[in-house]
Image 1 (spheres, one colour):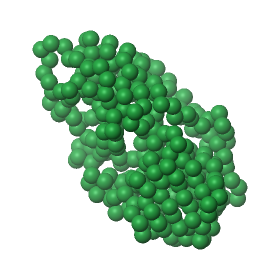
Image 2: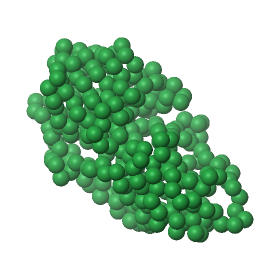
Image 3: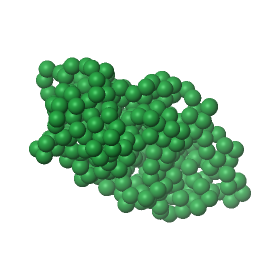
Length: 313
């Protein structure tokens, strides 16, 4: 059932879900929603399971013509939403009807919003995922960002009987100064003074920030004398902080599979949502933690999502 026709596509709007796993050895990255918390909550707000396909909207949102009755919700970055010119809230569900015009405006804070629809957006399942990998023209809607004239469909799930809203205390903030918790390694032995620098200095997000990674600018993270300038290429994971030849950190994201630069530390998974909402000019500071604490943080995030799911049933 067709549900939305794209009138204007926004700056960069793609279909994403939790990601495509198990194919990195073939050069196919994980992809998926960068802010997994906002992505999952958006789905829960419209009564979906946590891994239904949504639209990831970056910086400037699209305008849609509504073609069928549906429940929708937007979560993540603060983006003003209007239906036929009337403002709607975020982190809550709302009903749309055929003929409505839905506008998602430029972000006020944060970087990425997630638009969910009851039933999830109906695009082909490629390698177990609906996510878009633009670099490989794979998945999502024809393997690319949306353009004017595209028509998005849903499986025909009926709207819910009631609206849902996330309580204020569970809505995250997106400040311009961000603390990221990270575990040293796997090549932390390449760095001594560099480790102290990374975990004590402020770094600015540069304009080179996308789904492949975020390049930072700040004090140089120097290698130990005698260490090679690069390593044998090895698999990379979202959150890896690699140090290239210019000694400026790069936080890797979901559209890279291998790397040949030493990785000084790894941002814990629950904090990747914070990176996803950072914009050029924001300040990042790193805090060193151990693996046990990282596991605790992951369990706390999962417990919160389960609590939210129960509350929104």
